Length: 151
Image (cartoon, rainbow, N blue to C red; front, side, top):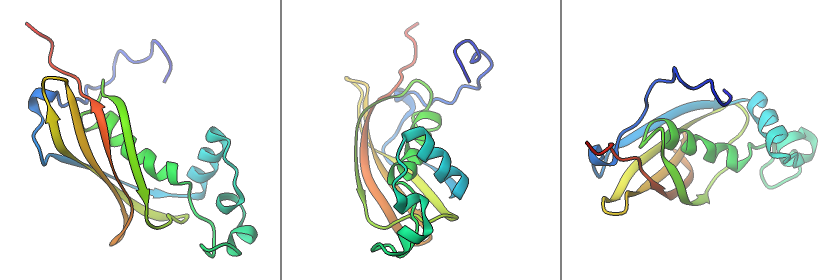
């Protein structure tokens, strides 16, 4: 989607006035070789641990893994599309990676409202990604949340 092509977009926003602590949204996505290749091209990160079976088999992971930031991108998708949604501005993101995501893993990303600063329109979000029962990524984000227009 390019500039000028957004007039028919559905509104996907939960305004700061309607947010509550504990509110949560999730996204589930399988990370395929196609996504890994596309992310490598977009980011210019062609590290062989992501791209080459032979090389990756000799690493501590014993095989190829997805880019950590590809997994983190699922959090960004939730924040920008669901919670708070359209109009949200990232201010800060902290992440810790606990385990790799491998090609064809099904990742479940969850974002939960942890704190709301109505005066400054800032929201702190807890962020987590899992593959099955394994937490692969955990962190928090600080965002500027959209507010309802004043009457």
